[in-house]
Image (cartoon, rainbow, N blue to C red):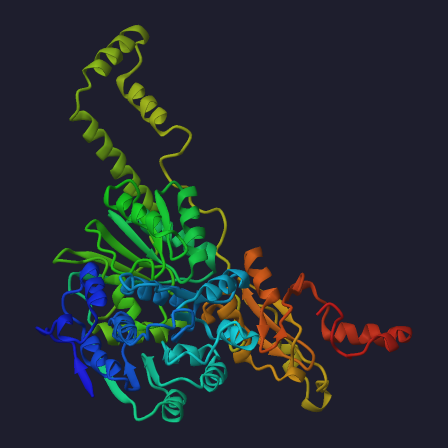
Length: 600
């Protein structure tokens, strides 16, 4: 069964929802159900297993939350009845908030979000008090099931939200294990933006005669939005410089900058404030009241720039947003369309600028196909462009000042000229300099040359002298040695105390880190797995609190014990270590694993 996005006179009152839920829907301002809600709610109310294929932003949370809340069994208030699995902490919190909002008029109703990185005691206290709905990430849900703190017997309904994302993050085995631990499960709902074969296998194995509903979106961008892209290289510092240049050179009003992580919202906002811009972060960790105040400040022109994540900016409609800048390219076309839809609304014109790394060209092409528009490349504004803009703005300030009552200053200047006999032009120039304070009006040309981006493994040049040697004279690599390339720019290498001997796979490492530290899997770099340990590259400068969480994180039942590998670039090469061991035979019996440094 599939549906198109079309207007419909259908109403929420046409569903057999309880009065408290209809009241919550009315409080939320919902008027008509979205297509997936219209088609999904009756089947979930009837107790059927369902498979829904729909993109983010189509209203699928209400499509399963409202009917499942209608099926809550009174008298079992102490035990969880509904379990929702979500791939990330952000989504788990978002879904839990939606359940809380929809169930606010139900008596003795409680929702709990459980995820890695939060103290177990907080979650345990709430479980002991009693909750009806648990929303969690797979890793933490598994921990509670093993500990016996999450009772599976009373759970009659299970939701797998964004199943394809859980598959991509390496949670497939975890999800299957959880499914097998729910003996009382009578209803299962699976939602996914795409339907890869592994997801279909789960549906066939664990769902009973499910109703399949596919929602096809006709998402295109408004013709009033001018879309451009800028190819960026050189890492975070260069992107910040590019962002500041664009903000200065463009004719801007309100600006919305989209990034991938909550940490980045704060970091980039602080950078912009340090450069003299009025900016503020907007992310899911900021309290709702503070987020509302920040949006009101943007509307009132007290701040000009919001640096936000996708979730935090959902539903944001501020008339003065003239520019949407994608500091990080989104992972799917739907997110891009939602992002740039914050400008160019109600017939107004808007500008959308996308930062693209050379390795992200395929995603750029996907976005162009989805939006049915060519995204025009743009050049980075030069220092001359910025200085021209600064001069124009300075002249505008003078023009604005001349329109005000300046009679007092006219008399003061006339008196000064009579006393000093200074040329009026010189006096005007001196006053202009005073108005600037210690900040020069014009931007200086950079005194350094841009360094080229490091070569990738595929494009790295091979030394001519080495290739010139005949094949039979070239030294043969030792199979027992594991050669590792250094981390890419902007990354640091970490050691994990688990390897092949423990059956660790790359997907396990990605899933554990993404789940426990709320790091998107796209930010996890090269992974190498050895017999007794593994290494993983993570973004440079990870916060200490995040590292502490990862040190305690587990893969299955075993602790990762993640530790930073200090000064990776200065580590001696494998060949140097081999020579050193050959020269010093007295240390050979102290070395248990040939070819691996003791501090790795």
